Amino acid sequence: MKGVILVEPHKVEVRQIPDAEIQESTDVLMRVTSTAICGTDLHFYEGRMPYNGKLIGHEPLGVVEEAGSAVKYVKKGDRIVVPTHICCGFCSNCVRGYSAACLTTHPGAAGAAYGYPNQGDYAGAQAELVRIPFADANCLKLPGEPGDQWEHDFVLLADIFPTGWHANELARVEAGDSVAIFGAGAVGLMAAYSARLRGASDVYVVDAVTERLGKAAELGAVPINFREEDPVQQIMERRKKKRMDTAFRDEHVMDGVMCGIDAIGFQARSREDYSKEDPNWVIAALAELVNPTGRIAVVGVFPPQDPEGPDPAEQKGELTVPWGKLFKKGISIGLGRDQDERYNLMLRNMVVNGTARPGQIVSHRIPIEQAPEAFAQFDGRANGYIKVVLDPRQ
View (cartoon, rainbow, N blue to C red):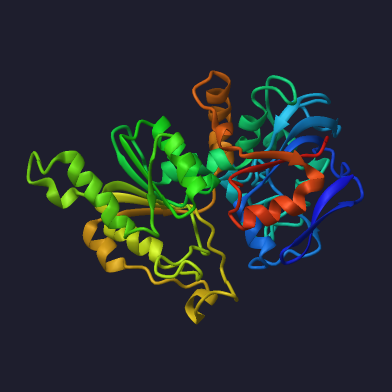
């Protein structure tokens, strides 16, 4: 089968590799119809989370090619999507709704994923075939046919749409809330879209890439370019003007937002010098911007160690966090991986009934053979490469 192999930093190749196979009676094989490139894949591509020589990718959509003898829920020919995080469905974490911390799929650790370093020995999903373990727990059945009007909506159920929703769950976004999202990659865009679906009254998206900010505006958010001016001040000025200097009960101290989301993570570009990284500034900005009693969610990736980090503390996975300001304000913080299984059924139904169309952020659909060029363009934030879907059938 064809698969995308990370050869070395900044180099992927599409190679002929051995077909995925059924290994356990609880497995199925998925014939992939769409497989997306994630911003997390760029951490591997840039060598910041080493994964050389392996098949990458963790966002597949497809059809069951073969089912193991113990599989009951799906059969050959069923259209399915599977979550990035592989779960067993029966361990103590899975039954409590924390499928991203499954205790079975990566023995001795909490959590497993396709094509991901330190998340179990599971092959990636940027290929023609993918082995799906614990299929009854992981496969979500879908209506329709490959290539139909839902193809791009459904492929985003593997990771990006649930992660955006998860960010809102962690920040407890409710109807009428004001929300500031740092990062307008696919996760940040889906966080903004989810906030609008949940009834947020004002959504601000902070980034520096013009095309991404334009897409945020299309989704109903207010784009904020942090290279033009301090994003905290930009947002607070907008909120003051919107209120026209009035406050019902001297509420000027609440000129920030109630909810903040970090959708960037450890490779955040510096606000002072965009050519450099500064993983500390986003949490500092959120601590300043989020109102007293507000909530912050962190869904951007932070690895345990980052040997190439900008200073010794970050290299050890230690950030400077303004705990004093956060404590004084009484701000709640939630962080961590998306609990995919908790949301994907609900989000599938929202797609099918027309409430949600997450696929509108897909910027490119290309044959899998063009993956090397797509990675290079996506990594460079160039030419409008916002969300890329690879098609193994072309």
